[in-house]
Every structure is written in C-alpha cells, then in structure tokens.
Length: 148
Image (cartoon, rainbow, N blue to C red; front, side, top):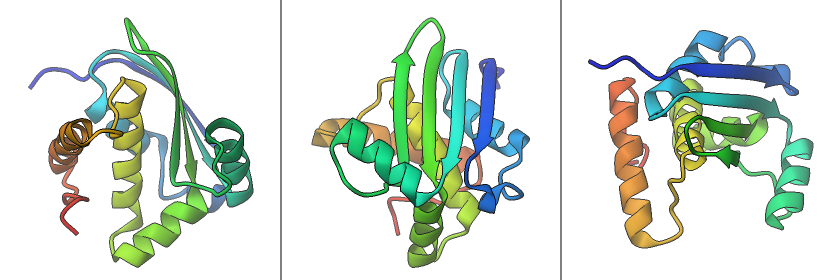
C-alpha cells in the first residue's frame, strides 16, 4: 500500500456539538484517504446560521447545506476549506438511519474530492465521483452512501 499524501490540517469547531466524535486523527484519516496529492486543508464545523450565511453568499442558496468546499489550488498542493454544518449532518444521518461518524466520513471524503476538482454537475461526472467516494469509503469501513 502506498503511503498517503502529506496533510496540513486546521480543524475548527464553531459548533462544538460533535467535537468529541471528530478527533483530529479521525478527520485526518478521512481526508487523507481521499487525497491524491499533498494537501493544506481547513475543516470548520459550523452551526446552521453560519452554514446558511455562507451558502447564501457563495452559492446564492438560502439554506444551510451539509458541506461546502472552497478550493483554492489543485496542485502541486491541494488547498481548500471544507465547511460542514453540524446540524444538517446530524439531521441527515438520523433520517438515513446511519452512524453520525459515517456521514461525517462521507462528507469529508466528498469535500476533499471536490477540492481536487471532482464534480457531480453532469451525469458522467457524478458517476465517476460517486464511484470514487464508494471505493474510498469502503477502504475506511463505511458502507456505500449511494446504496441506501
């Protein structure tokens, strides 16, 4: 197995509700599993108010979403901010009947892939990105999020 790329991680909890669930080593493991190049990534766990404000300002959508990816560089070092809304993640995990940590793993992998240029706007892009997510998550022991 090849070594995982280097990762410089900033982990911030504006919403502390899941701090104990997301220790730095777990967040690093999820992101590293999806990184194809070295990365400098900040992860900020926010409440619905901040998540909604960011989604409105940057995407023109007036609601809090589960993850926002702000990608700044794809190479030679992946540079990005991942903003995850704790309330939305908690609600979605409960609705899907899946462990909260598994949903965080999926969203961290999803956001990290976006940070590297993966997208899901077109059907062929979505199929490629979903297959990559499923493969990475399987390696982490997380069930396929698209087979629920």
